[in-house]
Image 1 (cartoon, each protein chain N blue to C red):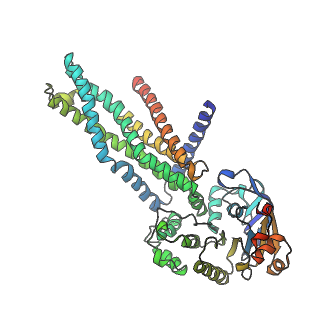
Image 2 (cartoon, rainbow over the protein chains, first blue to last red):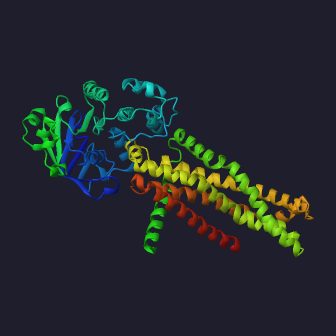
Image 3 (cartoon, rainbow over the protein chains, first blue to last red):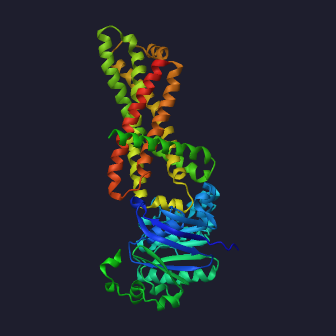
Length: 261
Length: 254
């Protein structure tokens, strides 16, 4: 096993995505993610959680600072090496999972397999069926995402990421817009995944620490554009940081308006 | 405005070069996924428009023949009917009308679907899965549209030439099919076939590149989709007309 961190950001400034690529969202991020860790990152909505994950996955360069994936500086990697690194990191996007709406759920899962192995959908069908079974999505396999309940979309995106057997899984706010049934499913599935795959590295973002407190092993927050590593769950419980207190108490009204930034 | 236009053209050329490099370097990569995508684009751009194209081809032949034969009959120059059909239909109108039809029917669809995908973050999702968006989204469309515009132009030329002759036949113009064919074959040169091929492949490729570029190259939100669609249509029409002017020069030189 390599002792290099899977993901390492050093004094990095994370920029916004899309139209806001040049604007800094989180500054001075120094973060090392090692194999087998289970990180839970808490923040208010719209403060840059997605931007942090997109940057950590190597899909976007930090505005400043250094970024390493599996021990190699991102800018020193060739196109092929970068593509190979990407396959070791799975990203599950927030709010719908960014599924391909013109493909069925099964085709969404088959696409990355067929693309990387140059095989037909039939050849990938056994693998697709196994992941659909594991994630409980078999009954929606032949539907297009728009025909399936939106609360299932991020779960489908998780299945799509899992099919490539990533070493690191970055899951963006999985309980966002989730109904109680889906919330229970996520809170059963992810900790179970961490147990059954001890080398799998998990990073989850959330707006509420409470559901993840007993499952996560490393915790951090993003607050007022700053990155702050809290430590383990005991240190989280002992923290007197106002955002941590709020996230543990579930009392969002106790934050100042300026804390939303 | 001129600086904006030059800057956009420069970015478009860079996008075209990246697409060319990706096409050459990844030609044999993931063929089981890419070939069906190319086939889907050919079906969409090269087969589905056939009924509409037949109508336009017949209409084009009737219009050109109707206008010219009436004029040629007055001056006793019916012998030039085939020549004019070749000059006007084969060299100019058929490629231009075909590419404009493909632009209206398929190009708009491409820019809307790609810009919507871009706005919804699906392109980032492709990258996260290690799939090159240029390889997966752009290459099949460029190849599909280039081949489609070429094939449809050949079909339109045939429709227009046949309907052009039918018009002269209905109008009792003393022109036999063999004479009509002889006139056309005499005025056709080998360069016509080469230039027609190059021109139509270029038209199709350029329309695909501009629509893909407008849909994918910029970060955008859903409310920008209508604007980039307009930009893509205007850009494609201007590019085809400018390219057509270059091909006229090629005809003159050759």
